[in-house]
Length: 630
Image 1 (tube, rainbow, N blue to C red):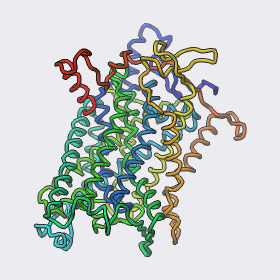
Image 2 (cartoon, rainbow, N blue to C red):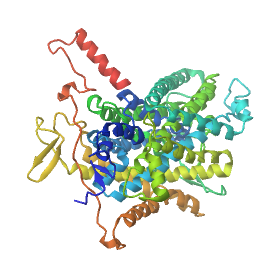
Image 3 (cartoon, rainbow, N blue to C red):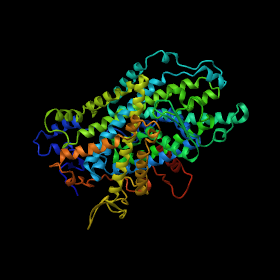
Image 4 (cartoon, rainbow, N blue to C red):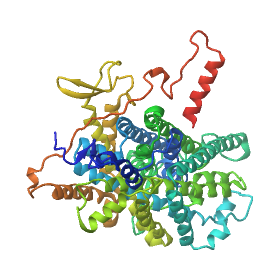
């Protein structure tokens, strides 16, 4: 077991306000109040807030704009499989982090658990990698929202698909500099993030409900359009685009960075390479999965509402089902080789006219709805950008509380103090402002060449988040060794001759994800493979140094940050003598208030056991449905 000097109350150098005030005089209560307003986040989010914040964080440009690129890369059937595989991979990793966070709802769980169970340097590096990834997510969503204002279809394309109008465009968007939209959206994102977290939660709850409603409507519209087509209104049938000459899978077509050469891979090789490219594109869309655990420090009733457990399960269910249904249904109405979906480049940010949802409307002669959907895509990107800044600011605030890394005096100490400071409403204003300043990377998308750089930064952040998922999955595998399956009537923390262990069978254990050891190993293996093959296209002739660095630079940077942590904290510069610094701490776990497993929130409980149909049973059923819907 590693030394405990940097771990207090089970956190990597994170000291609670009660500890910092220990031994104070009669003014301790006033000091505690001031400290709480100065350094602590506000526990104001309820279970419904957490659910919709996490859901909204995953519904941005990835679903509506990048899904067309995925269909082009691997075909409609392959796209469904790719989303299913990536959804299961991230569901497994998120469940690992969700269980640990339910037991220990700490500040910055992405940082804390790799620090506890792997190495403190690993946790420190993971925190910075995740912070930059979410900063880049914010910048990408903002730039995508701004570019989506430039909505225009080529008149020749409209004529080729027999669209009833000669023009389909947003004139005001075409005549406005995208930098103006970037600035307006960034300012709006900042304002929302400076609001008290309870207000922020309410806003995101409304935004999430709007997204859920519109997505459901999109799926129904695609089904109706396909059914109408099958009755002979157009030349496409129910599964026309899943069959020859289009097909379940597509060939993999790649253009080199200079655009001088195009490679086309067919057969099994094309399918394999297309699947890897598609899955990496999908992963960037689903980075918001970890939002559930990031909100833990601001959860109001973690022990009563079981918000982490429910949100971890609901986000996986909602996102996987909705993503797959949208991709499947638009694949029924749009061929993968539609000119507006073709994108053989390695890095690019798509626009509204490239969305398969709008293309489906255009190809089926639907008027009016393309404008609505384009506006909705801007709204979705804006909402996801809000969440990206929220997550990055909380990660930066958590990084600032790591005591032994920051300098004890001087400018470094002043920066740390300002970053961990919160206002009277519990908002880490300085962490929000610093993270927001880095989101100005969104201005890169204003011009073509800088936009390519932003696309490469998106690839870099994808690899960074894959490393984060690898570390959290590995942390769970170590955490699992500190648990056992005891009796249900025993406590969450039990003592044995071999030491203390967490009892996963305890009736008040907050979140037992079944088969989680195997799922964590699956997530770990899958993410490692994705990192390895992340940049395969950079090896095509001519070799692209820029794309290679974008795909793999995150790995050496991660290792360098881990090393620098040990250089700062180790007494001597002898790397081969450095040990693993971790506490393996499992003290002070949270237990749920409801000990009856059948009455846990989210479970269908029949109140009247003697009969099936009774008013109380019906009310319990609809209560269960409401929990899982909202």
